[in-house]
Picture (cartoon, rainbow, N blue to C red):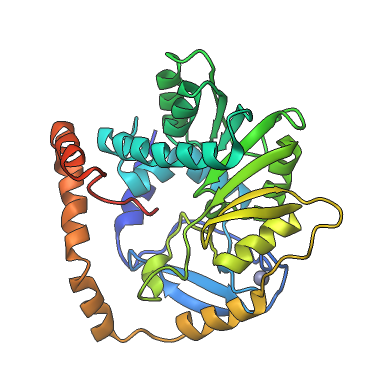
Length: 339
Ligand SMILES: [Zn+2]
């Protein structure tokens, strides 16, 4: 159940988030050198985000402790960011089903039809797991959020080959090489130790398995400013530092689906070094984010975003039937959920 007091407190601008945290070095490259990129988040709450001077990774400082993050993701995150208390909202599920359709197409295109033991790492309400089961996969989902994992398990019962596990990645104990495909869509930015998590994923993956890894791209926003930072994303990646994390964990890229969306495999002896330049990423991110954004530019930018805001409000209040009619008319979900 939601911890109502801290959730209400999380909505109030200028009030600090209630967490202690601790100082950490860059979670991807280990550097201690960083600059402050923002002191507020998109809710206008005090939250310090720093940018690594060596690889350009953004990360929360102080970083929430492992226990603080585990507690937050078990009980609060979905209510905090998606207004989902006991179960996901119907429109959320429908949007995720459309997203899962696209992802299944990517998976079949890049992993083939013979790799059928799949794990969706951070499966949310389980749409991708159900879609893969419908394709004949032995599909497993791992999800720490209690309300979403129990929803995913209940929804998955109609498929014979769906397994949903609750808990964190540290608690999961899958056998080595027990999956042919592992997907981690918009998960790594929530973890304080991304390289350790990827190494665990590597253990679970078959030697010729495929990893589908996707995170938000902090270089992908037209306006580079504090509104891209919030408590649930403790890391902010760009293309090259995402690949650096993957390489440090023993992965090599096969296909780029987007700058921060990759198909990877286990690194083999003799593989060439990665074609990345994290120092250049750091220079670019510092040049673009470590400076004040003029309020005029910020306001102008938001005028252009009013359509998206209207769509988001409509999405929250719209009845599912109306949502489906829009999908039928336009061929896609009315709003794109980026976070
Ligand atoms: Zn770094």
